[in-house]
Image (cartoon, rainbow, N blue to C red):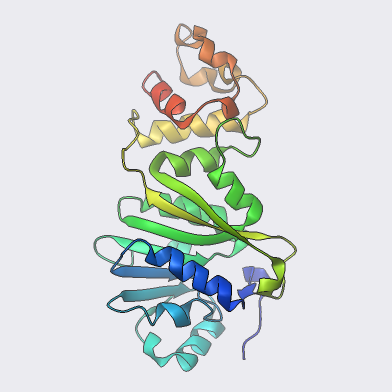
Length: 250
């Protein structure tokens, strides 16, 4: 067998029912190319390898798990990328789907990497720590609504699918988990540019207790800041509000 490494945030899924539910959520939207992030002990991988007509790859940082997976599933030969997902290049030409029981210590960074690849990612089904999943899916006005919520939902429709208890993992984590799905927005949101949109959202939420006027005053001319919308706090603005404001930035 293999060892579990705390340093890599390894909590391996062992509940077959949850594995099947994740694969079902994937299969609701047809795809031809699939990347699994962090296959670990192969709980999802063994099901994904059985999907017909799919070009499949997985990325795993832990050398011990790579060797174990290759021994356990010989059909993975030439399909495992031994690297950190955060450092890898796009695994396929054209569109692809992403799935994974994501290491919780880098889950936010995984979301930002997916955003970098948003023009190619046609679907993502991922397991996150419950609080992170709730944050990503939160709507304006919710206390958990923040940078991750706005940036993810500006480009993807986010669906909160189901929750997963601690006993579904080995070893059981100290937190609950949840599975969410990203699908590209059907109608893109118009913004001045992604760069200034990201800048605005991060500035607004980095001082979320302040009114928007005080949090982002360096990004706008004084006359623009007189608009009543700047009396609000960041969590009161919709994604569309942020996108519209981006056109008025310096």
